[in-house]
Image (cartoon, helix red, strand yellow):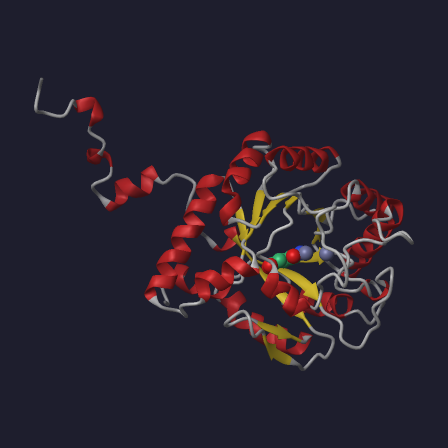
Length: 333
Ligand SMILES: NCC(=O)CCC(=O)O
Ligand SMILES: [Zn+2]
Ligand SMILES: [Zn+2]
């Protein structure tokens, strides 16, 4: 038996040089358009509040958000995902405050458009930040999801954000048929060629949303979301949910959370290679990595994680780390 390696089995000759390694890591580069920044918007335009459970993350009123975004946009930021938070507007059974004219998102959109004409403005659409019961849809008297009422409300809210200037509507409620309801509403108002729909198509009932729910004060008062968000172990439902949303006209798909669900990312990309795919790196994932501050180790772990998300098939990653990533890309950190 030969003591020498067979030449067919020598791989290391293909990656001994940094440039060769780049070629071996195809489609995994992280550029600003591969990053979307989630922002929390308060009713009081001048407020700034740190988020206790998420280091370096703040909730802003519109004036303060514009100040914070100036630096980020100058540093390459291409897109944001806006979450409205109400403190004074009332929460009720159908989430009326989601689309009233005083809603912080509706008030902020024209101002953000004016301040940052090139920035892509995506709006999360859900009822949970605005409902008294904290669920993502409208409930029947027995507490089940009222399906028709929910999709109708979701489409109304989506249309209100679209009219106020949103470029992208991102429904996170996980109600069946809401993509079609939203697309129908956009078509009926001739907005279908000015607004796209990013579906939270594969959103799991994860335990990693804790810091976000503290931030948004959006936990359900009773029960959980297991009857509409997907069971973490189910790849089959994730495939069917993505197929449903593609059939209903979604422009973009999403898997959420990210890191523990990279098999679902690959599955979704293989099923729908022509639909750009997003990952939501959720608050629990953020907290796990951010625990160690801004150290070199954090940056290395973060960039490795993003590379792996891209390798699995993600085209864009929604991440609270966007400011740090832009700095890393610009070689400032
Ligand atoms: N609909 C948006 C979320 O639920 C975000 C979850 C998180 O960041 O933990
Ligand atoms: Zn919700
Ligand atoms: Zn949500």
